[in-house]
Image (cartoon, rainbow, N blue to C red):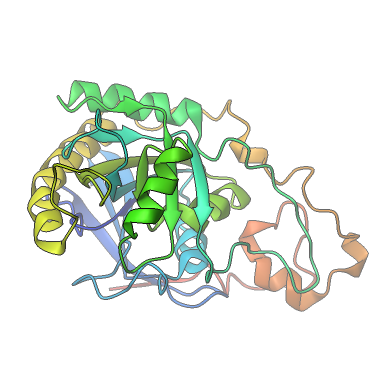
Length: 299
């Protein structure tokens, strides 16, 4: 099943035939908002507004673990996220859609893993985005009339402030393509949850490095957000209305297979229950949970 996390500007999908709205409980708290289960052209999809209705959560405040856990609990296997970003390259002007293939994590105040507290896992994230799913998304984008620029590095900063000029120049010297505030730890957690993960990075500005462009400010971002949102909805419609997500020949679905290093006999019942559906295949709950962390209350 396809899951979509809508970032700044993409708070809903009007074309989505809503089937149910779920308030999902997780051991990591509540997700950003109610999850919307719906259909497009007969295909199932789950939508979540990353910053909540009315954009009330900062990038640091986002419940990343709860969001990923909740989506997985509803059957999501492929996760497409839409994010507003700044460009660090002259050839990527505003309204460009970038599909990055690498991330540099500069966040400092966010839980990065579902593991810990008695269970250790070292998950490979050399390639944080699923290439197979990404190519599928890129094809849908082209069909929608909004082709993406494939490849590039997304540098994720803590925010909520934009970067300084010195930081912007530093990130350019590292070879980064775009700058944003939400891809991490989202990508890390998606890999631990064994989801195929891809991002549409929608350029709204040139950050603050560009000598002939005004420094980034909210009014400028909002204007391009409106235009980017139209493109994002068209891409989603093409993606969901087509054949749906691709198969899982990528390895993402078995990311935890050899990653958990803790002796299972040493993992407590409370830790197993907290990990829940993230690690059920490898660390079955010691006591029945009766779906306590995968319940959805219909509205």
